[in-house]
Image (tube, rainbow, N blue to C red; front, side, top):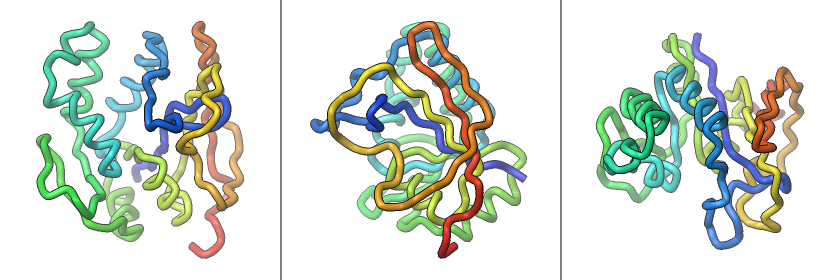
Length: 191
């Protein structure tokens, strides 16, 4: 059975993008990038909201990204090899291969993907991850906490919902980023 993992870069004050929707402050650290590459390679399927999908699709549609470095080429290859499910009410067609669009998040469908999978699934996009957490589907949360505060923006974790987590691992990087791995204690109420 596959696990559903929510990995995200997050500022020390809990944001994945600032008040202007910008996330250019994300780390350029090779070790952090390698950790994300390992996650992508371990995944069989990526579950994305539309906005994150449109950002990440450049790893397939813009060859210049992969040409930046061997590490970028490795990440791009892993991303292209993964199946993608994009949850969107507005996207009409995917711009990448191995991609399908779903109009609504269906917890039962994700349970089936987990049951049938032999590779992990990654969920990306804070809103989509919040839905997966609320449905009790997330097996692990991986936060890459950056050593900066952006002062406001889009929260990387659900707002208005309590999720109790147990720390299962942590790893500091030389850049000051700390990777935190958490496991939800139990399914949220109302599952």
